[in-house]
Image 1 (tube, rainbow, N blue to C red):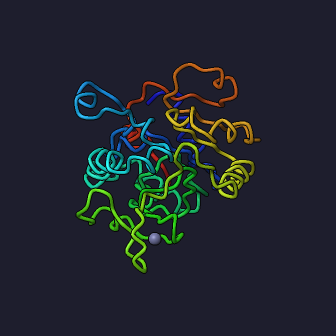
Image 2 (spheres, rainbow, N blue to C red):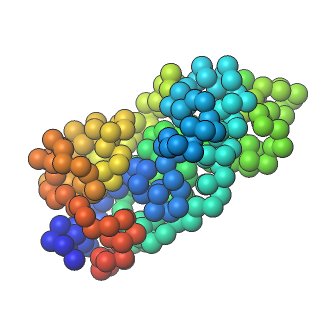
Length: 250
Ligand SMILES: [Zn+2]
């Protein structure tokens, strides 16, 4: 085990006030690929990039195109995803009273599926479905089970389309939730950040808010941020590999 990973193990074992920030790489370890990735196969199938489609104006204008992509590239792989040892370790750390909160920029709900309870989802979640017109929420299966490509709200003959309750471009974040995330980080002892989340709002703000000396960055490319990190863990494999190697006291 590398020295960096050994330090991470020690800090986790010694603390009962840990916050973990997860990004797309953490979900990848549960078999859920990055839905924003564009490869050659993607270009043959889809005319618009995910970032073009994940805009409020696009979804309103072209729901058929959006939902065709969403069903194939988000829902279908998500059904296949399975939490691994990394997700399960966070569940055990929470149950042991050591992990205070997970803050995630992911929208896939895999932490909760694994059994984590205190999860702050800064970008919303596809596990909830929303009708903007009625302001009603439904579960994941309301979209998944709808035979029509564009799923419709059935409340009182509403007929408007329903959509995943995620924050699209051109939409505001839930500022109460962002404040809650910042407050949580301010008072934690150990802050662990998945490097793949570093570029996403509000993670840079969380880094700034952190007041402790046990910041752990995992799998980041060399960055300016590194100077603030107590330890940077690199080249230790996937999150599943890392959690398998560490001897954590749950
Ligand atoms: Zn409705």
